[in-house]
Amino acid sequence: MHYKNESKHQETVNLYRRFTSQNQRIYTTDYVLDETFTLFFKRLHPALASQSMKLLIEVFKAEKFNLVWITEERFFKAQELRIKFVDKPLISFTDLTSMVVMKEFGIEYVLTGDAHFIQVGMGFQKIPQ
Image: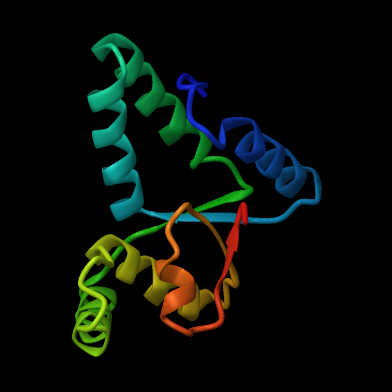
């Protein structure tokens, strides 16, 4: 989008294009957007961060995208995972909520740089590798 200096930017753009051209649905959660918006304002000029935030919200209103809200039930399931993976303290609570949603919707692939999704042994595959 607006921060092309990210190490995996072009690879991510290519993955996005591939998924959308194949009519694959793309999911994210309100927690992931929360982290993304925070990152925008840490890395970009405020005007560009605001523009990026608005653009991303518009993208997730489109038909090919699913914005999943972390409900109370999902929150407590993530809390159970936090306790289950107490030996992996670096996994963020946002990642745990994503894992709950991925299991619920049968999502196997996750666009991330984190190895946490592999380390939990829940059958997730990380892209890009």
